[in-house]
Amino acid sequence: MLGLIGSVVVIGLAASCTGTNASAWVGSTDPSDPVLVVNADSITYHSYAELMAVFGPDHRMKVDARVNARADEHLAQTLLYDEIDPTVALFLLATNDLAQGQGAANARADQGQATRNYGTSLECVVYMTVFGDLHAQLVDNPEVDAYNAEIRALDGATVDGVRIQVADWEQAVLAAGPANVIADDVHPNDAGAALFVDVVAGAVDDC
Image (tube, rainbow, N blue to C red; front, top):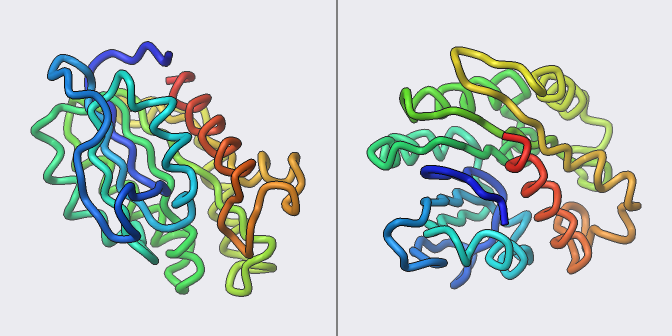
């Protein structure tokens, strides 16, 4: 298991257990277990079972999945979780930001503000790169390269006392072969879902 101490907040691309727009507490019912909050869009909809297998037994999980969700749409949500004093935040949002023309700078600014919303308890944040080689709005989009380059440059840095780790989803997909792990233009198949959770868990472990 990951052996994390304190509350863990995961903001990003994850699946809903009950539909494409849902909010529910799942996972462990032990009040002493850390809290893991999943704010999500549809990219990892098929990763829910794998996500639960890794995090569910030892984490109380808040799943908030939204179709076409952007980082700016989750800003208000982050304010609600400050009271649980999270120690780790995982941001996997940006695919829809870039596909909808928000741009790399705006996506990063929104994530930065959301990070600050968590307050002084936050010790580590994980950002995730975007895979866009097959998506009509993302292929050959310079904003994808700009966003991923900025995210990778932050890997291992400490900013305002918060350590930054990168979950490199793009490189993982390219290494595995997109045809082997992507079901359509952007969503993972079963093998991709397992790969996604491996990438996420590895980044959280590095915190």
